[in-house]
Length: 334
Image (cartoon, rainbow, N blue to C red; front, top):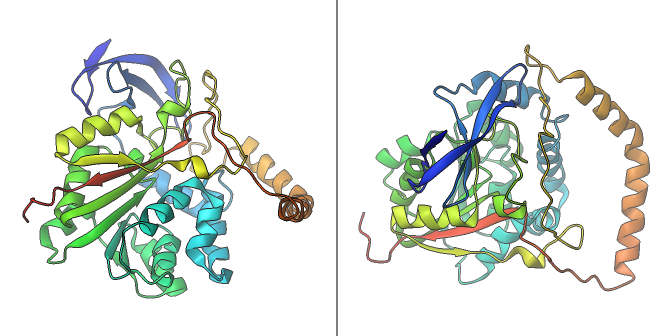
């Protein structure tokens, strides 16, 4: 079956029918564009409200989300919160690197989809004038209670229609892969930027896997898109923005990146039909807690070892994360 790619309008083909969703017993069809290499979910209607409520309730136990809970807790103990985040994940390393070069401390920054609030907090502690916006009122309340009054509950598109403020930088970390419509969302973000302002967008990198990989990110409909660098080239053309990418080769938690080999359908549902963790995941989390003291000891050993010898980092393939910079034209009004 051939359909139009929502990103570049070229032809896309259905490459898998009935891919298992994030929650039992849902299934989705997956398409891939022959031109920009974007992979995306094909579905008429998508409702994620109940899924995100279940994820929020179980976030400390769900792989991927559990690290965010850890970041939110540990950052309060960090002497330099932004440096702490940059050491944990290439997403935040790339953001810090971009902000280090030519960004004044008085720059106004808006983090879109601030979630648990720790990145906005880290930016504020680094001296930036930063605000986070998030559609979840509960998340904003908890972030405000933990870090301070740096957050607003609102939808970006609606906020772009009413805001009198213009920002120098918008940051979206791991947001756009969750959206039904990417381009209108980014257009709303650009409306909030001053001429010459930049939009920093991070998302999982389709190009880090071999072309025949079906889907290696969170199951649909939690993730609806799997974007490549070519995807961003097409997006920048549509938005009339300049485009660049942050080189993440200076960060690699494992020392090396390699182009990952194709895998078949490896993702299993993480939530059952009632919104609870599936049994295999509950067992895995129990074993993780049992092993955690040994892992903590091994982490200390690695830190001692790494301090005793210089660490060299190299990348032999694409980073697993894209950090794209969409810059608004200096001559753009509004």
